[in-house]
Length: 218
Image (cartoon, rainbow, N blue to C red):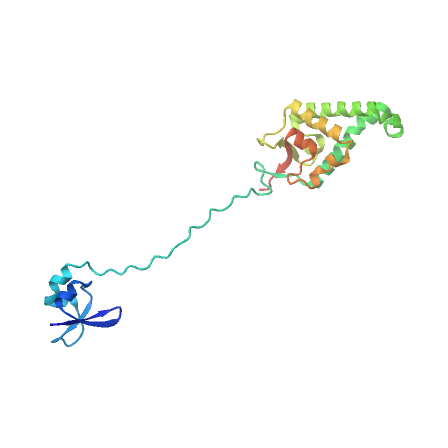
């Protein structure tokens, strides 16, 4: 007796029992042989029982789709996230410095009785000494209270460490920063460095490793 099979939606055969032993014959395989009115699953044909028992059950394995794992997101530090603060804007820093200069000039004008603005002789070693003295006073007295000068206080900004995010309240660090500002103020480029620096640092900020920030709005 011979048998016909449906394999991959196509009729194959005829096969003898011996030939079926060499094929993968599953319970659900459709078989026809002489005497059957229609195609019948192999499990319903007693003559094929021993052959079916020797083969594993039919299991359709869906082809695996190769999934490319997503690349981990690249962390980018938010531009306005500096230890929980925002960078002070260029104009906030500029105007704060301008206001500070005006306020600091008041005692200087009183001491020199206004001659500071009229007499070129004051723009000399005396001028530098006065500015250095002012830097020592600002850095030594204002920084421990406001973490910055009076201009910073007025505009709600302050000076923090670029490395740790801590407020600059140490008078020595305040003096170093203000002293560097005074010395570099005689050179225009170091003072306007913040206009193209990504962290809006002047050269004296880089020397003292500081940045000027303000609180983030809620």
